[in-house]
Length: 140
Image (cartoon, rainbow, N blue to C red):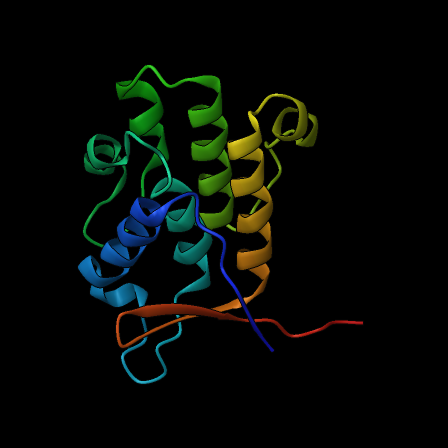
């Protein structure tokens, strides 16, 4: 079942698509499937207002490195939580991410992004013909 993706703004949507197109190995050229380790992480990071400057510290040729962003920039609480959650999605682990801080320590916009990122991390993301889509498989 296809689901709608909620973006913070048109700029967020454009930045997310730009990242998917900029780093070719993230999207399978045959199926259009977005690598699940990168998808939700880039969704979160590309929503940050400071993403263009943070990008230089985070994105390598074929990897993401989050400690560089945390060390090189004075991140706000919302930015820090978003970067830490993106790192957890990328590394397929949430062991150091306190749930209470995600819920109580973020503004409404960041909280909405976090909820959507969890949903997208579980969904299958695709990028075809310059459009990003998500498919949801119901699990019981």
